[in-house]
Image (cartoon, rainbow, N blue to C red; front, side, top):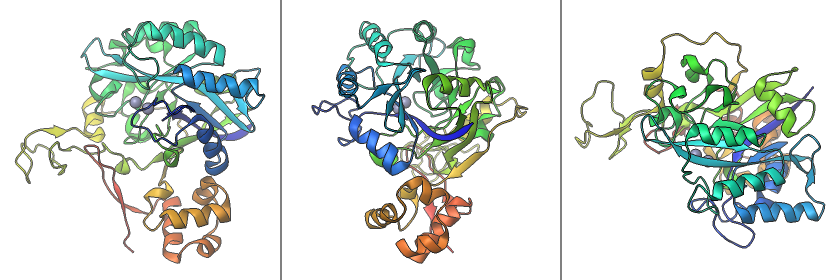
Length: 389
Ligand SMILES: [Zn+2]
Ligand SMILES: [Zn+2]
């Protein structure tokens, strides 16, 4: 069995012709830039491109296939050199229980099936060219269609306060919205980790994924997983999710949840943390708040942790969060060590010191060892690493 790095939630900002897909995504986030950045700079082996329902994105991938640059893997997935691309789509459904929007990820084995799914979707949403669109289908109907086409179905960033299953989507249980047997895994999102998610009983049987939800090239692989597979393909990845034949997630690499944008409950007006039981914001007297993921999990928790074997969840601090790693330091690191994966995981302190100032090298090593001090994020603002000795 081999170990591979996979980030399964990457958006497309623009098509080759410049047409917007993820409107809030970066203009440089094109299919060809995603491929080269993910493979050569980040050091990933497998990516999920999650806007493949967009017809121009499909055209682009088909063009790469017709030129022979993108090759269909016999077990599903599309190979570009050493990088395996799994085509997919992020969609928004509404909870029948609460009316709240919920994001989900659907993955498919090849471009022909992806095209069929895109055609089907175009009958059920307003603009097939755009990302993360509201589909006018129930969660269960979308699951049925995904399964009929041989796809994988994964609720996305399940704890974020907006647009997620446990944010506002369910009162008690995911069965209010989905058929629990047709869920292949769940994505934790930036503000939660395995420890937090295992406080929810019904999640005990699912594989946890940690993906970047990147809206720009720099954010690719800010979360990812190491997976054990024989090879990189759609079929192998589905075995990973089912934890069959020795395939499994070997480790989740996720943002320290404190760094996530929605970790703690804050005032919706000025983002001041609201203490437990606090009525109004101490700073601006506003009484509305954005509930943090940590508090939401406590609400949903059974009080007992799931008794399941989980891969380690390794808190990682992306290089861009590390004080002192600006554009110049980043360029120097890439020139010296090739990929961000090697800087984050393996390059020794002595070598780092030759590429960046000693203090920056120290912080990179501390990040690796989980020793950085972090200010919690909330209300849509990321947490921050403190540069204190
Ligand atoms: Zn989303
Ligand atoms: Zn997304």
